[in-house]
Length: 423
Image (cartoon, rainbow, N blue to C red):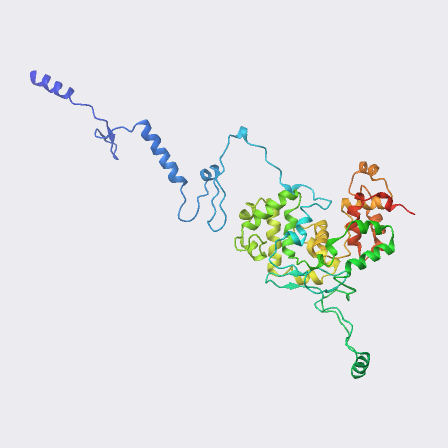
């Protein structure tokens, strides 16, 4: 009895040891149970290891997405961390600007970015160059190419009067006939009728011959766009069209900011606009980091592809007729008829462009023909001021200089209306 009692007492004096379970299910008593703090540390470590990128590329799982961190390769662009906020404090999503209707009037963002002086293009201004042949139906601006050269409609110089004495000229005519000046083979182009020095003057004379009342309006508003200086500005067609897309449905300040961010994505050419090849090499997600909507990013990349493949080129834009030009460019996603007409007028410096769908032109012509514009506002609709047929009939006599006539109609309401009254 005493032996058994002592055995029980010695067993009771042994300290308790935490039990553990072996893989075969047998319990052991040599390991401590993990505390609550230890469990929390382990769960944090597991979460950190799950969010770490693998060797194949950046982690794109749901946990990484919810943290607001977007990882792209170092040679492209890095977006700073965006902290998440509770759903109740998040702002309402801003609607995609591409879903809004296109503008109907020339805006600083849509048209201002098409002017050559806004490009920051590395090619120099050609103001020191000599006068070139020009023609109302032709592209009168020199267009740049990705290689750094430029394309003009008429490569030959204007014909100069012969020099020397009258006898020398007569003897020269007996020996050979004067060489006929033939315009270069550029498709639908007509023989030149002016030079870059005289084109604006010829246009003003024609407009005043049709309606002398326009003389005061012309004197008050000098059109630099078609002046000799304006016609020497080099235009990059891809830059002009892309800038027009950037400026759609946004303010001028916003368009300039987006354009600056867009060019900064291309370190090799910044602050100049990138080439079509550079844009094609970037993915849509990278282009969107400049502030472009999904559609605008797709439009600009699609436009770049057409220039890269040769479907669009400076030579084509120089030689195409007005009808072919509009047909080919309207087929490009993101370029509506209004955008193409503005590019043809402000970018290519074509002289016979007339946009009937422009609300500002409608309003100006309605004022020009003597209508009370204030009473026409309530009508609404696309043709709230004048019908398309009425506009075409009014502008027809000013052909082939309707671009200048359209430009004046935008400014007519800033002028004393008495100049438009019939004498």
